[in-house]
View 1 (tube, rainbow, N blue to C red):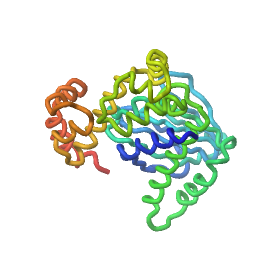
View 2: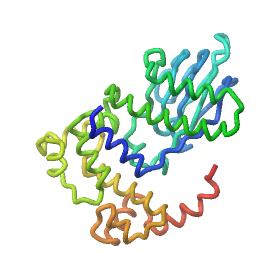
View 3: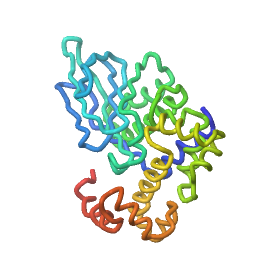
Amino acid sequence: MTTCALDSLASIFERFSLRAHVFNTGPLCQASRYSHEARCGHIHVLKQGAMRVETPTKSAEIIRAPYLLFYMKPVTHRLVPLTEEGDAITVCGEIDFGDGLENPVTQVMPGLIPIELDSNPHLSTILDLLFEEAFNLACGRQAALDRICELLVIQLLRISIEDDSSDFGLLAGLSDQRLAKALTCIHKEPEKAWTLEKLASEAGMSRASFAVKFRDTLGMTAGDYLAHWRLGVAKSLLKKGRPISLVADEVGYSSPAAFSRAFAGRFGQTPSIWLKQAWQMKPATAR
């Protein structure tokens, strides 16, 4: 893995809090449906048995243990156990990078990464730890499961970057040594006056080649990605109690007024109104 990719991955977790919550361990006794409206991703680890995976956009697929489904962003899907092949033993968790569908990380993540665990022995240590914790009743079990699941997410992201297994989205960008350098700059220093020329120079590419490569890989222009990242970081800072005037400067806007206009253009409301509503909703959404 390249150093720049590591730095960029680290800067993502510095800006946005990864949270995982394991909600099922044991037999999948009946069909379970997960909606994109839940505004979170999911991990399903199939330890034993088989199940059918259904999504609205493609044909149903049968998977058999050991297998892992990593939905990195909210995707509607349904799991149906195949009881004729024995109990489907699973460990399932919710994954949240913050702000659901509006998070700049999840917006450019692939919908699903499927992993046949027999062909990925480098996951065996952490999965052994996950299973050991999942199937006992030791004190602090839930907290331990959630932290192990968060570590599993980080490991899965590392593997996806190392293996260059994504051909589109943020992980594909981080897998490309040149694009990773530009993405690192955006992630680490959103306050800088980045231009297409400067980002192309960081990537060691011509302006035209960089613009095309970035758009084809991440599905948006470098300028749009920079704007999305800045506003996503701004949301995170506002939630931490940072004044709007300081947030505007920290994410690269010339004035609070310019920041408020950009924020309202993106989210349909001013930062102060959005923050007030976010605080009002917090008690209802907290687990």
